[in-house]
Length: 195
Length: 195
DNA sequence: ACCTGAACACCGTTCAAGT
DNA sequence: ACCTGAACACCGTTCAAGT
Image 1 (tube, protein in one colour):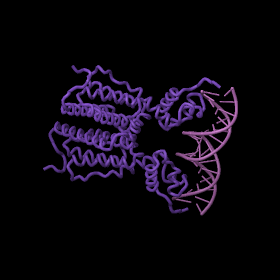
Image 2: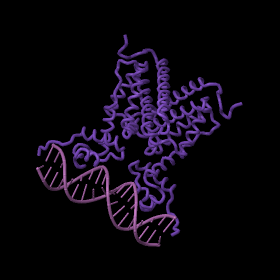
Image 3: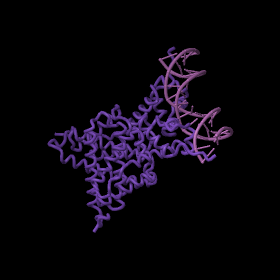
Image 4: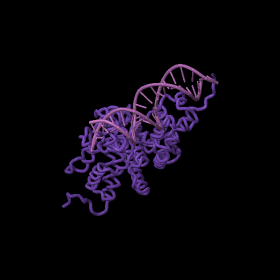
């Protein structure tokens, strides 16, 4: 006994994401992961409960790759950066990305992203409650667009047209946020940039 | 030879949708469908190419269930009706609905829905090109929300809060459409309600 | 403690054979 | 023409056994 581990949970998750990228979600099997790690499929179960657990971890790892814009930037640029980052993430991992829309946004990584978006929206002038509602809607809209794009729903449309669509969407979002901010009660900014 | 068929493609598709509703996407197997129809799994292959073909047909059948609002209603009500219909459809078929976001919108049924939405948006005062762009965005946004809701991404939030979120989203959409319509060149309405 | 061999129930799919 | 039996390669997962 006391045998040194050949594989680890992070290695399993990384291998899984790579396989999903290369062969799609259907290609992501316990056997494929094991083979890539030079181990039998049964060895995985020491590090992972089951395949559902593995998938959850892969989605979580996906979110880790989403870079959050620097807090110094003005809120409009931060929001735009987030949108572009989400689209690039979806293009890098088209097989896994759609899963983001299909599970509760309660994990540590999804909270990390959410907190960043909420903070950005509060800086845009929304109150705490409005910011949380706007976060749910903005995230849903961006996720839906990026998932559609990655999933091939827009296949047949030129890249330029899709980019223009997204620019239009961003503009609508920014405009709507300004409207909501303008109608917000009293304290126009609760951010740390107050004086 | 000349044996009367015991099953049909429509029956296979209907059984598949019912199974997906009851047991989820993972429960939708060729064996489960065959068993429900009182036949061996191999019999399905006379009526269906393979499982991918079956899934495509199920998604298409899903769209058939989406009622289009009557053309007499004002465009705002038609759009609202479409949104509610999409959410109800997603709740009725939560396992299949998310697939709508993951395949090209080129099928007959998806064209039927798209044409209806485009016509509605033209009636709202958009030009042909703007109407098609708006259709892509509106559909993506509604689909993304309904898929999130059905997939449990909003689990933990009260039904009222989700409804309020959606009402807010509808309001933003309507507002944005009015803005676009106002900035549209010349012909303010190409609908058959012209005079 | 960690990995493997053997085993099980279940997939999708084919092909020749029955009626 | 339509369905079935037998068969194959592949899944996820368990459990006892090896080191």
